[in-house]
Each structure stands twice: as structure tokens, then as C-alpha cells.
Amino acid sequence: MNVKNIITSLETKHPGEKEYLQAVHEVLESIETIYNENPQYEAAKIIERLVEPDRILTFRISWTDDEGQVHVNLGHRVQFNNAIGPYKGGIRLHPSVNLSILKFLGFEQIFKNALTTLPMGGGKGGSDFNPKGKSDSEIMRFCQAFMLELWRVIGPSTDVPAGDIGTGGREIGYMYGMYKKLKLENEGVFTGKGLNWGGSLIRPEATGFGATYFTKEMLKINNDNFEGKTVCVSGFGNVAWGVALKVTELGGKVITISGPDGYIYDEKGLDADKIDYLLDLRASNNDIVKPYIDEFPEAKFVAGKKPWEVKCDIAMPSAIQNELNGDDAKTLIANGVKYISEVSNMGCTPEAVEAFHNAKLFFGPGKAVNAGGVGVSGLEMSQNAMKLNWTEEEVDAKLHQIMSSIHVACLKYGKQEDGYIDYVKGANIAGFIKVADAMLDLGIT
Ligand code: NDP
Image (cartoon, rainbow, N blue to C red; front, top):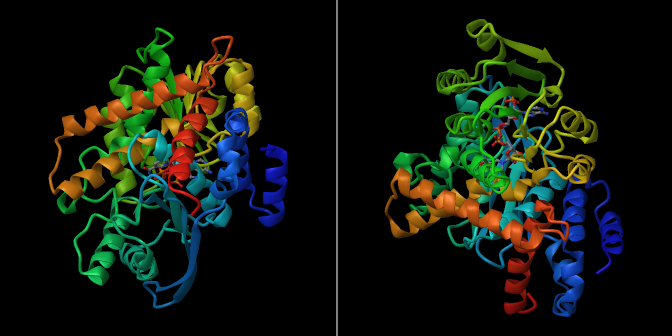
């Protein structure tokens, strides 16, 4: 394999798909050596078959707002690879959604899902619909219209969607409700469902909790722990609140959260009460900044900036792709950061990752760090199939086990000659070998 040639050919075929090309480039660079040492991969054209999705469904979504105005959005489902199990990946609802972003997310998902040790393939879906500022009934009408197309291609053994940016429990409820109406079957085709209708305990917290457990493992091999550590978190969505909660529980101090317009700096750190307060604000669709600053005057809002300028021991980007760039990385390094856990998918740009590697810091990539979300989704699928529910303790113990086995896989394949652990390489190689070997066993399809 020649990475440069493959990327050049993909650029010609898919011009302008920069996020997708970025994700493919990162994986291919990590696996180049192992790929070339195993000629059976090249003989079966594993890379050429892996970098193109099995199929993409694109569809129009028409829906009506509360004033009776008709709106049209575009929806997609990228079914990337099902070598080790049904396509599995979330649905993103955000105005920035396009095929490049969904293909990057679907591609990453293949390896992330493989790392969880559970039988799940990779996929992703979404729409350029903006849920911000919409009423409940507008969200419902949109989700129902979205599902009127998507239901044809999903199923519990075919393709199992879940949440992502803009898609939480409410949206999954509306989508699954329409799916059931159309399909006349009560099968667990979504994960992230409500507890009353087939969901799993711990699923809402799973990505954030899992990311914190992974970070705990990174600290542990350095004989370190969260106690007293300052932690900068970005975003305050589905994922970031779970991070904030678990880090706080383990003795860390979360000193920032953020949104697209700036960040909140709270020197005293979040605590369980503050997190509950923020979640209430978020659930009622309120702006969180002003009420938070009014309620906790020790906190301040820094408009138009990112939290990476704040001195911290651990950085956990938890908002959106490419949210931490090379300059942010330099600032964090200059301020003495020691661990970086990428909770968002591709949250750090290649320049940032390179800077962390050059500084020999502990950098956990998204596909390893945030795999706890899909891990517990896999557990939700198992519970649905068995028609039983595990307790909170059982799910949490399994999540712990999944995250520490991902950490072990990263060490196995990422340990360098000088002892430095390249977690990016480790995660990519471990995920790739599992999928590639399954593809070899399954023949040319
Ligand atoms: P949410 O939509 O729930 O939260 C996103 C958060 O990021 C919000 O607080 C949002 O603020 C903020 N945000 C959005 N854009 C920006 C920006 N440009 N700069 C700073 N903050 C921004 O999404 P999730 O929490 O579900 O997802 C966050 C990340 O985690 C994504 O990369 C996602 O792919 C990844 N992920 C999610 C999983 C899940 O289980 N949900 C699983 C694995 C990964 P505001 O609300 O004000 O716009």
C-alpha cells in the first residue's frame, strides 16, 4: 500500500470531502507498516474495499413548522462496513452535516466498534436540520419525516442507529415511535432508547463515563490518578456532562465547559449540584451561560474563545470535530497539560495530534476514548435480544471492562521502541486487524 497514492486517488474521486479524507489519511498512516507486512490484505484489496462505504442512502425530508411553513432538508445514511456485525452509528442533526462529515464519522465508527469487542459494523447518518430553537412538535414532525425514509434500510440485524450531536433521547423517541408504527414490530432498532421502552441503564452517561474510565487507565500506567487534577472540558452536550460528572466523582476538578460562542471558566470547579443545574437549563432549552454566571458569580464567561487557553492538567475536548488545533495544542503544552483525551470524534486537528506526540504527552484518540457510548449501545442490543435488563452495576462493570480492554489493545499495538505509547497507532491497528481479518474470512463481497 502506498498511502499517498490512495489518498490522491480518493481526492480525485471525492473532491472537497476534507473531513473524510482526513480520517482515512490518519488510519492509513497508522496501519501502513502492518498492512505491507501482510500481503494477504493487499491481495484481497482490503484498503480499497474498506475506504468506500458499502452504500449511501440520500433522501429529501419535508416537514411543516408551527406556522404552517414547509421546510425541506436533506438526510443521509452511510452504511460503511458490516464485516463484524450490523451497521451501527449515530444520527447527527446539525446544519453543518454533509456527506464528507458523515463518511468521516462512519469510517471512524468501523474501527471504534471493532475495539469494543462487540459484534458491530460501522455506519453513520444525519441531516442538515438544525434542532436549535425548534419547538417540541417541530422536532417531532421532523423526526417522523426523517424516519419515513430511513426505516426501509434499518433493522436490528441490519443497521442500528443511535444519538449524536443534536440527537438525544427525545429525538430517538420520536424516530423509534415512527419506526414501530411503520414496521409493526417492537424490535430494538435504535440504541439510546428511554428506559421505559427498551433502553439500557447508563447509556446516557456511557460515552462520558467511558471516556473518563479510559483516561483513568492512561493516568494509572503513569502511577497517577484524577485526584486534584484540573480538567478543561469543551461543550456541554450528551457527552460532556457525563465526563464532568465522572471526573468530579473521581476527584478531578472540571474548570471549563463551552459552546460555539465561548467558554465558561469556573475556578472552583463543577460539582454534582452545578451539573444538575446545568442539565435542567439544557433540558428546558434555555441559554446556560447567563443563568450560570448569575447563580455562581465566581464563574466567568469568556466570549469568542476556546477553553484551551486555560491552564490545566487534562484536556478533554467533547464538542465537535477539529475543535482543538495546532495553536491550541501549543498553548496547552506551554501551560503544562499532561493528558489529552479526545472525547469528540476527531476533536483534534492533525497538527494538534502531531504536537502532542512530539511533546511525548499521553494522547487518547476519539475512537478509543469515546467508544464507551457505542459499547453500551452494544449492551443495549444484547439486553433487547435477550428481553431482559441488566442493573446499573452490571452495565457499569461491563463498560469498565470494555474501556480497559480497549486500553490494553492500544498498549499492545501502540507501544514504541522508546516506550512511548502512540495511542492513535494502537487504536487504529487493533481495530483494523479485527475488521480486515473478518473481511478475509468472508470472501470478496
Ligand atoms: P451535543 O449536541 O449533545 O453537544 C455538543 C456540544 O458542543 C453542545 O454543548 C454544543 O453547544 C457544543 N458545540 C457545538 N458546536 C461547537 C463549537 N463549534 N465549538 C464549541 N462547542 C460547540 O453532542 P454530543 O455530546 O452527542 O456529541 C459531542 C461529540 O461527541 C461529537 O463529536 C460526537 O460525534 C461525539 N460522540 C457522541 C456520542 C454520543 O453518545 N452522543 C458517542 C461518541 C462520540 P450548543 O448546544 O450551544 O450548540
